[in-house]
Image 1: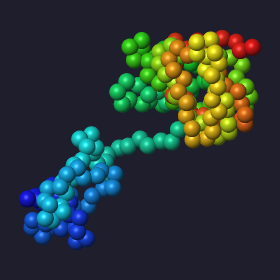
Image 2: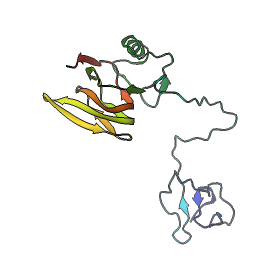
Image 3: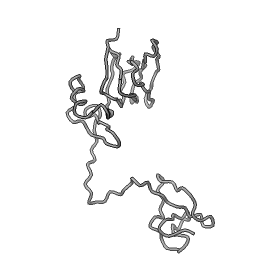
Image 4: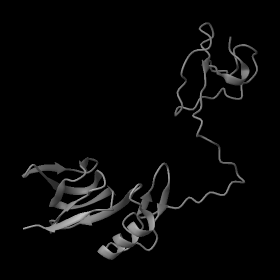
Length: 195
């Protein structure tokens, strides 16, 4: 039998089948699907909320800020942590300062950033601490991975992504100038010139 506290009626009246009174959980969120029926005869459904979800009340302070990832990348740390990297410079020194401030050998994390590539990359790079995910936003690129001495090429369009596996040298040719989101494990990244 359904209880008032845990049911969400599928009837338009949105009343609990067992008592006829409105249930505090009677309006189901489309983002949280019911898991199982608590009464076959009424069609009422159990309503489960994930334990990590909480309501943000009007008294709660929230710091909701939009960041331009081409200006202020975000460090995605261990677990669920994320920290904007204010004043980041897209230079060798900037990456070094970021690694020193945010990364450890046990927890390298990832740097989420947007970079614009108007021309062919002049170097190969390799990430020794983990896989890199690249998501193309605009333009068109041919990404190249060097695996077992062979170049493997993949054309990537907006909305598509590739994974550069840990330890694989990679580069890119520009078909159309492109912008991409990079989720990069920065510590241990190596570069070498591209001929």
